[in-house]
Amino acid sequence: MVRKIEHIGIAVRDLEAANELYESLLGVKPYKEEAVESEGVVTSFFLTGESKVELLEATTADSPIAKFIEKRGEGIHHIAFEVEDIYEEIKRLKAAGFRILNEEPKKGADNKLVCFVHPKSANGVLVELCQEAVSS
Image (cartoon, rainbow, N blue to C red):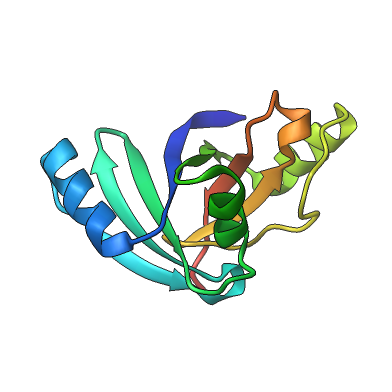
């Protein structure tokens, strides 16, 4: 079950410049910057009420964000929904006919387990499901 919009991911060419722009726009500083080496990105998070804005800058030319910007330019990359049980949601969505991009959740930024629903299954929108990772 979806709890809320967790964050909106925005692909940017220059994280430092985008941080300045969004600080001015939102009136708050980012609370966290984090590299996600497996995805070839560095991210920055802004808290906006109960949801967040995540800025994503590519760190490698072959990362999904670099390819996205090359094809479409900067802008909204994905919308993320917080779920109660990511494993159950993957099963439920697969049974409902959605195309899941990663069958097993993987570690994402901001201490989350994540998986993605293909945009062709969601009216052209890349959907991320995320759940707080349990620390061991």
